[in-house]
Length: 340
Image (cartoon, rainbow, N blue to C red; front, top):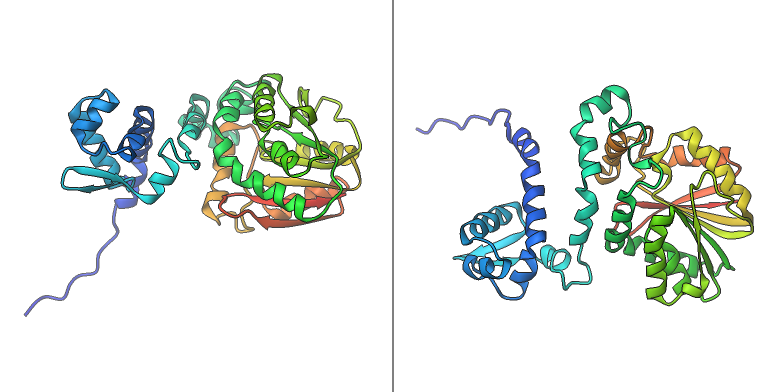
């Protein structure tokens, strides 16, 4: 008679998966640098042909591709590799959804250093990388961000532009705060031929936004406003202000001070659109939004992933009347529409 199976006890699997997660990051980064995924998509499916194309050793390619297969990026049959559907969409350089370039920012030295010193950041309550982290004036990493993150931001930029168009709002003057690559303002200008975009960011970052405006053919309606958002004169009479991935860098009092400045530059009845990682009120769901708070702890002095109720309170304290939140499809962010 067989003995009844014993219930499984606690497993250390999660511990080892987490401790070794850096290996997957390194393997993915290496595959992107070798352009391995595109080579497989082009029909080079064996270690030998991949090694020749990628100018690497056959032994190294075999070990890398087997690891990526176990990680879920590749399929393997006999000795040939193919891309998974997700990999084909996001890691084949020829795909319009290619995200490989984002790794230049996502694993950049300044971000990684923040996590290398995370214990100190937890004890301190803010970044251990100098006094300002990534909010240091004219931080060079924001040029990297601007050049690499457009594919990831294109979908929310289209969502915002479509929302504005569908509301039949009379939009002529738009202020894009921390414009970075400029894609949010660019998409609005493409949808609304009368819209004029003022892009605010550091001068070195705005060169990237200018390039994207010229590529989109809207340079005649695109103006650069270089400097700190807290210090420059924003102007006045805006119909719409875009606050995309900006407020999460700062504490609540700093956000409210800036929001009062935004309130003053908007027309009566004007709107502000905030795009952010906005977790639910439990602060642990959805995980992709809630976990962003740890990024802010590691890389900024006092930033956070704020909940909608926290944003709504900030906006009201700054003088705004009403806010509503929308999920942005195919994105790990949410948009908050606020009216003056």
